Figure 1: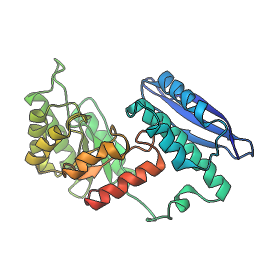
Figure 2: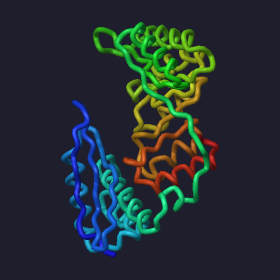
Figure 3: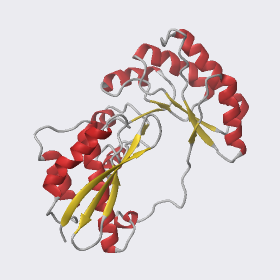
Length: 286
């Protein structure tokens, strides 16, 4: 079996993002679809997949690991969100083909299911505390047991400071009081703070017992996250903007976070996500 074509499709999904799908066709019929969406970089991703297609056409689609190594390590310039998202979309599509050839779902090819169910969370936003609270209570009434929200509330000047922390305390405190102690509240700061403010906010959140505190600082400097971890008594999470096993190595070795969040559509695909999870398991990181 040989790959005959690699095609991309851009699908409008709202004002701020498009979905990019990668479709790989073969000469024997089976084809695969993977996702390579990257907000704000639709045309760039499509071009990157097109460059990978020059290598892929004519290749055996079932040599997934070989192709991953060639696309990633065979290039002089490595890494970054664009290259890794393009590779991820291709890799997921190749697994789709393999599953169809084997007549098995991909999870069976990876060793079978470990769980019969998992806990899911939803997102809740809102400009005011009252709006956020109303939405959260509506979700709880529908059966949700966990939600994620942003604890940050910008001042009118658009600056994150102690006033933002105070407003964040008001919002999260109201959620905890209304939802009860058993409901899981997850906090996502979107990497928008420097360590001092992240520490101040994290300490203020401790009484509300968040399930985790996600990306309090930007992902580029693991030592900045380590400063937060040393002074904040809530579990930390990060990883949606880290790529490949090498991108996760330092935060795992230094014991900086309690949860990692690799995105299969960005970090390198299905098998690379599995490798990252195995690394995390050795450090008891969830």
